[in-house]
Image (cartoon, rainbow, N blue to C red):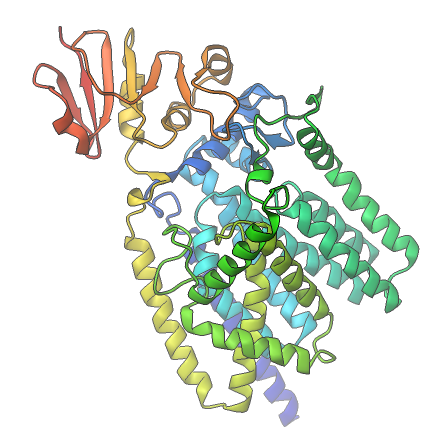
Length: 521
């Protein structure tokens, strides 16, 4: 009876701790996402406007009907996150909340999935440590709070692996095959998935066949499911590799890019393949050690992706996983996941976004390392809990008060000036190109009619990775050097550039970071 009461008491404590951690983790990922980060990223604006366009007009901004991949800037953007945004935009309109909420929700669900997965393959203590660590993980918090479409990739793989293991352990074919449906959808999240999926799934199938956990028939059906769901992307890769015409169907467009961006970000197609491969790997190791890549929006120094001092636990965890391979059920999945991710690092120019698929294996082994240390030196558990909690608090404070408007790919405070100039009629509006891709912010904040954009847009160049829009409708985008005082002219410039112009005869409206100059003569 006493043992029963002790077990019941422990189980209740675990339930309370899990509930508390999930509440903290979800709040950290969702609370105030329309204000933090405090600036809008160009890829967020692009993905959001594409979702708005497909919802309201059935086409993207390149006039492709229900595309499986977005042409976007010319070199493409992954489409799945935009499709996830559509119901939120339908309910709340096109704004920062509606475009960021899908990623925040998916990342919050990942907290639950990660905990349940660790509980299945290890034990309750490792699962609890894993949930705590993922809740406070800087990489996972940051990627949850902005709508970068490629950051869906690791979450989708995590979900698929959980469903796979659940299906195998419960002998439930529905979960097992549903896992491969999710793997198929993963092909629409990021270009590196084209390499990851076959390199990951084939070894998994071989191991499961050898262990007699699946039959040959199940293996064939599994790969068939992935192949059917990802077939449009496979055709997309073929079209863009061999310069074939795009395919336009009543229910889908498989587009042709002006430039194959997946060739640009991987070295496999390069003439100096070996040199680039070596440099990519060295760059990846450098990022893994330093946990920063020079892009402030990906990681904040000195916290890094998983807190700098956690790397020692990652190494301990790898050793622990090898030593206790039999006790970690299906632990080979994380091993293959990590190995394939490292192989991808050879062909992918390294930064944290492009290496995002490597993060969950790193977190998994870090958690195992912490568990091993705590189990062998129990008094360290309180010390580590205090250290990680302090660093979590410091990171949150830094992240919340970080001014994303200083980042090169984010713009802060454009909503009001763009809404203002949009209300001006019979005016030619010149917008400075010192704003990165300024046209996408105009489309986003004005909720511009996509058909009108398609019919009036003019590009400075078309056969480049990032096409520059010269004009559409009443908007003209250029490097403004001289401004003319004409009643029909309106200029949107950065406040910091005011000394470059003679503006005394203009009507000037100040929007803090931007000025709107209206001709008066």
